View 1 (cartoon, rainbow, N blue to C red):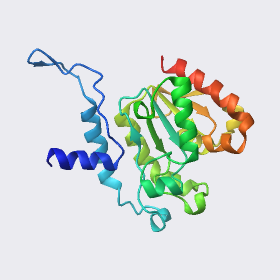
View 2 (cartoon, rainbow, N blue to C red; view 1 turned 30 degrees about the vertical axis):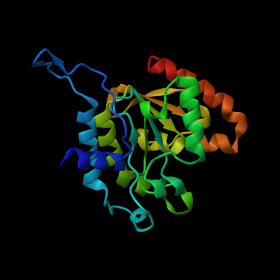
View 3 (cartoon, one colour; view 1 turned 180 degrees about the vertical axis):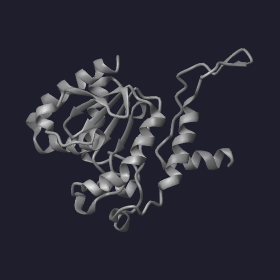
Amino acid sequence: MGAKETAKALEVIGFDEIYLTKRLTDGNKRIPGDRTIQDKRGLLLEHFNSFKDCTKCELHKSRTQVVFGDGNPYSPVVFVGEAPGEDEDRQGRPFVGRAGKYLNTKIEEVLGLRREEVYITNVCKCRPPGNRKPTPLEISACFPYLKKELDIIEPKVICCLGATAGEGILGKKLSITKLRGQTMPYPYNTKVLVFLTYHPAYILRNPRADGEFTEDMRKLKELIGL
């Protein structure tokens, strides 16, 4: 695949910038274990291509396209939502509607980062009809794709946006109103923290919760060392 073809393919899964966070070489010698974001981009692209035509659950019948993650694979935090909505299904990127704009604002105002500097994805990669909550079967069918996505990125913190994301990641029922702002170990890698907070769509429906969400984002900022 040539440079132009590779760039176009990467664009499909939402990558439009390169962040070099480590030195590549020491003179002419490669530093052992040193990787660039391009390495992770390649792995993510390969992963996306492996399931972009998935038919494991009923959601494939009504989707426009599979919506993969978007952002910087070297981000210390990965935001995980529930599933694509109408805007996301049409554009092929997660969190591009009203909830996404709200999240972008908080990332910039509280974390001091641009959206492109973090990584955002969903538990389910296909839009449920009518934007309904995905079923346990749909979450279970899609979770291996999310797990591998997280394995490639190796974040310091997984920020679950809403109860559905938290339940998908942790594999158990939970109350987001009781557990928001708290951390738990990621079951598949205890070095990674799972941080729970509200889904941005919930804040849009309940503006009084904005203060709690902002408070959670401040805690998240501390967790990722900003």
